[in-house]
Length: 556
Image (cartoon, rainbow, N blue to C red; front, side, top):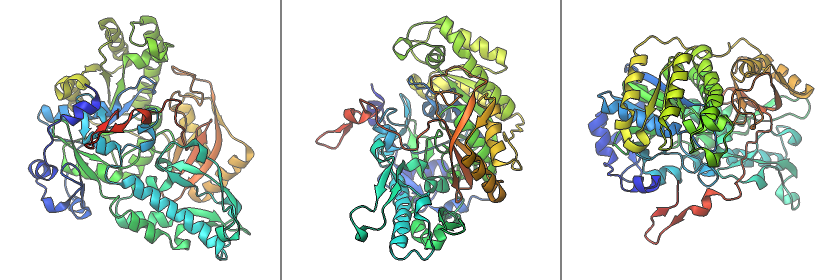
């Protein structure tokens, strides 16, 4: 059966009853969206502040490939397996974006017998959080142009407005546009553009806020432009926009509670895309889950060079989180791809390509154990085409790298297939963990970017034009304590997606920088990365349909 067919045949439990039995949560603290998804009240989350925290388990992966690695599937399978072996565990995931659902990747709710449900709802609209974020973002954009149209008392320089518009869809035609055409009644003409919603600073703010008050204060700190004369920053609070923006987000900030196929509870809240954003679920959901369970399994987007680094250097730094264990997801197929095998041939045994591709997992393991200083286990996400010889080679290689590699068959068998992985995670979590950041707060913004490039990407240096260098120098004066969020292609340690394995000696070109003042970090655009993806020649949307009785088909 397809993932969707498996999900549609699941026996779900009414969520209010499930939360009451599993968490002893009074139904009054849940705001149901139908029978199987609900938002948790902020009052309830505030009541957990004095509870002891559980272990935080980070699931990350080797470099992504078109073959897929299965981080979400492994996160769900591991969470279910921890509950199966008698541990009190919860799962924390990010919400899927409509862009990938209708583009290349498809849905993002796990797969096989390791899924969160209701799968269709989670992938399509869910509780409306992304729509609210897009509305809040575009409200601010509208208020900026409206202020300029009605006299521009703040003296905003319309040539340097950094605040673009957003839509949660892959639409390359909107990357660069001109607004204000059609005459004076429509405002002043200027260049503008669209990003996808998950690249919005409003999304980052929602993901890093600790309360509704914190959310509103951060929204007010968003830089919307600069004055014409002295180039001083102008903030959303100067436009009096942050109150209305927070009003649009008053429900979106509440974490969403759902269940797995095995009726274990999961928070699904906040935005993805660790290549162009920081790629983690909300801090509020993660912190709350740590008060509600002994083990919390969460995922950071794309490979460990992107998602895990940003999880450590941004989310953990700002939220005071202390992960206990990292789980590195790998597949035989993906490693053969790293070794030069084309996608169509990944199902065939190829020992030589696998051995060549081991350089990729070796680099990721080194980064996790040395630069992040985390105990680690490799989860071999099993595919039916994997041969015993290939699995043995990968396990022996990981052993030589100093970690265990465990075959996990949660896709086919659910929690039963990930029991061994769960036991190893518990063993590692009981050891003392002393993770550390990749760079210190005291470094300049340039040196922070350079440190990540050299330590994590294996680069010799970074490069940028004089304008970008001067901008980073200027921002270092006021925002030097901010962490950096490097937007980079996800397929390679370098900025060239065709350089597979573990390239080194390359130079990372920084072609743009943005200040996310409300979120509290600086974005560096590396290589040819784009903040508005495009659809492929045959988008996944072509296969999605709905029957006369409202049943979704073709979602994967």
